[in-house]
Length: 490
Ligand code: ADP
Image (cartoon, rainbow, N blue to C red; front, side, top):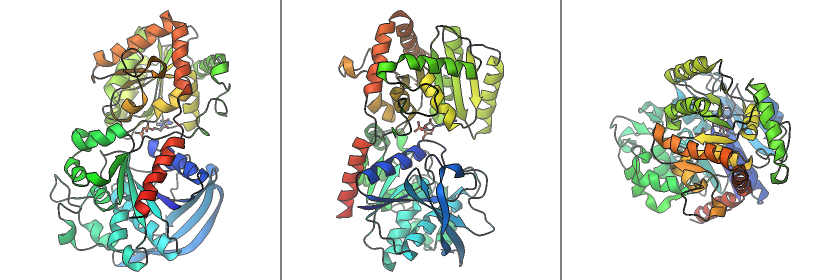
């Protein structure tokens, strides 16, 4: 099959969160399975250029219709860890992707609407006719709309779209200027509830909804979240739309890329290890303490790696920092945040605990450092309010680091409580809690820290079970292939 992934992120060149890991990991798996896979990405100025091999101009002049004129684009080509990537580089005074940031600009919706249009224009003008175009999140929600309303009539009638939603909260709501910009026009047609009109704001169009309505298959990143999004508040206002299109909705649990996340071959940690050489994990723990000036003793290290967003359970993360230092554990945090008030909150936590020899808070994005934290910690927390899939618990488990998570979304499909789960004991791999409050997370942390101190042998067995889980892309890759094959023949 010929598959083109169109996304706003791809690890490790442009990564903000899990979307990047998924695009990178899934593409590699689909190629391994014998498919021809290409990835189309924006040419951001803040990408990790050191991770792109042989970056060259592939197409010098790609005019992309925009409002009444066109914006010429240069299309670059490069290999990202063997993956064939094309980067769209618009040449206009808007400087859509030269903002020194991936997201967070006032015109984000215009930027990514342009990107969606440019990706299709690139396929059209270079005669690329993939069997399946795989789009991700609101940023590419307009792509299937443009494909089936415009490009289909210019020789792209056989292309099919699978649309994967990694986060229902961000939907790309906008006004009708987007219709004039992309050439869709006809506001009276698109401002309809069957079409792109937002279900709650009658004056807004909704890019994510457009993706759901127009794609041939809509997927979210875990089975449990596929259910939650249709039957609970986690559909963020799109429950009705999802139910109208229920015949084409599915959920596939993400995998992780074991070429990147594997303690056996990880070059970002000083001591590689497997289940047979678990003592090396403790050398990484010492390295982590050394790096963060933490006190060396028998305490377990509890960590958090991730975006600092309300979705992620900000209060519970802060509470864990205090709980850990007051209850015989240490706490390490690596996180980024775009919200000013949340940033202030963590800055103040950092100041409060700055002199504590059992705590370190690092505010920033550092992929290389995240490897050492996963390897050197004993437990990670994922206390999310909602979590479509969540990768950090799966990454942590590969490193023998026990996840302590709230039972929601993909966490339900990947973490099974050691004491209370109904799966057999040899499949129980972590700790879970339900209530989104201090007592809830404490109930799980207490059990995890208790096992660590009181039954080290049992704790070690739990680590071995977690490490033996297969969260590779092998099985999800097969599921995606089945979905693509199914829509290809429709
Ligand atoms: P989300 O997609 O909601 O951000 P996921 O758990 O699905 O959450 O994926 C997060 C990914 O991003 C993981 O690979 C995690 O290690 C990484 N990550 C998040 N924040 C940081 C950070 N500040 N530094 C390094 N890696 C990070």
